[in-house]
Length: 207
Image 1: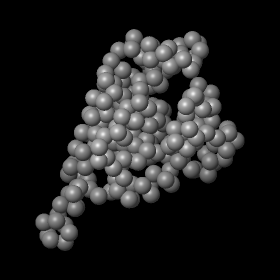
Image 2: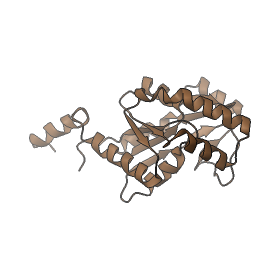
Image 3: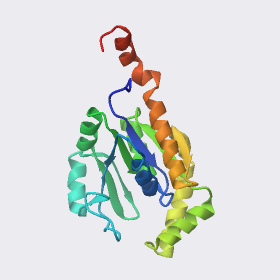
Image 4: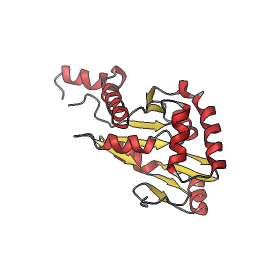
């Protein structure tokens, strides 16, 4: 039994190309997890193999901007000419049900979340080296050389913001990185600030 029964909001973030999505998928393959993936919304076109409602909610720019005006996002950002955002209502419902809500966002979006919900758990994913990041972006085959250059320049600026996160996880091997994040989540539930009230009730025989 967890002392903290409310689910955690876990932010997996980092520069484009570090493998956030791959790590997130490996995390959900861990046995007996209680994770819920918060699907982001974007105005970019689907890549090959991506499924609407599973990988992203793909919407028009007009639809996205309407939701912005309605304050319907936990966070949102415009990146390389496209919007990305996290719908808020679904997240809150799942946390109340005790789910660990995993949100995968770019750095700009993560810092927005930190201002709004500082008690969330923030994990910054980094590659083993700059060379490794460049190779990953090139091997994806989805961006032009000019766009890859922009992503690398942006990544270099974002590395300086790592101190704003609770944890840094190196993506040297996907399953290892997922295991580290799983250990972080388990440890966070045992933090005194999250569990002390439940603990007192147990000691008083009220649970």
